Picture 1 (cartoon, helix red, strand yellow):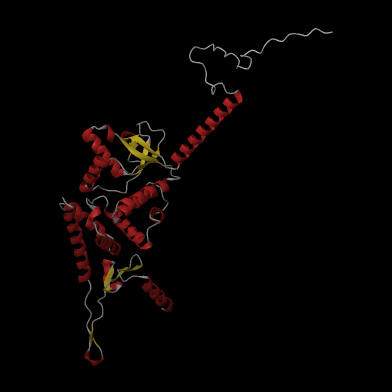
Picture 2: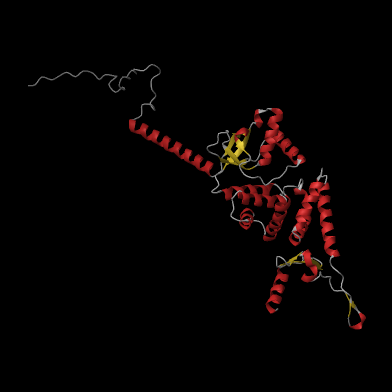
Length: 367
């Protein structure tokens, strides 16, 4: 018979956890989370890396689309990157802007484009925000306050030079009431810079959102810019009415621009009012000369003794001779111009509209 083996009593520590391993590294023992399985640790690191990469891509896309506001040092911005559409800045408006920047800081960012290969340290080209940049530069020069040493900016990347000019014009059209002269001037300068292939394309591209009538007036002011930009001191003071009258007179008499330029250069023009007086006087003198060349017609007596006074007309081409110009006021708001040498007839004035155009087309068709 087999001998029975005597069992020893159960030990209290049998079900207890295994002895804790001692770490070879100094410091506190690792926490349970730190001793997770390797696969879990790898998965966590991959997840964190993917999240960081996603955030980085979002930030890069936002910056590329001009949605991220950055702080840029003033001296790193080239405000001459584009030909500006603002000719001058009103002193009172600039003082008000500087006061706002002192009190509330910069509320609206400017727009800049990255520049490459510059050796002068200018790494950003100004697209819009010239007044804000000028105001902050003046504040920093006056105070040396570091708060005014940088400017908030949106970094944009226009597809072309045309898009850059359009961005500048549209931003200023929204924030600043540009004069027709300033609008026409930027169209002229953009053409000279080779941004647009023709003046018509420049007007259509820069002012595509403007009504056709407004774009037509801007196009008329192009003539004024081309003729007088080099001698005018206060061009933004020229009203729409005066500007269009000057353009009309230049169109009827090409020599008028030369006389007008000479009158401006000879006059003392310390203020805008003095310059406007010169322009108005020259225009009135030229129009008076036109009237003096127009002999009145004999009144015609109609049936019943009524007297008809037809509108005065100029001499015929043969009678004009060396003047090479015929002009008359046909009716209120309707002026007729004729240049025999250029074989050109022009109707102008407030009465010129679509209805008159259709009537004229019908008359010419039956003529």
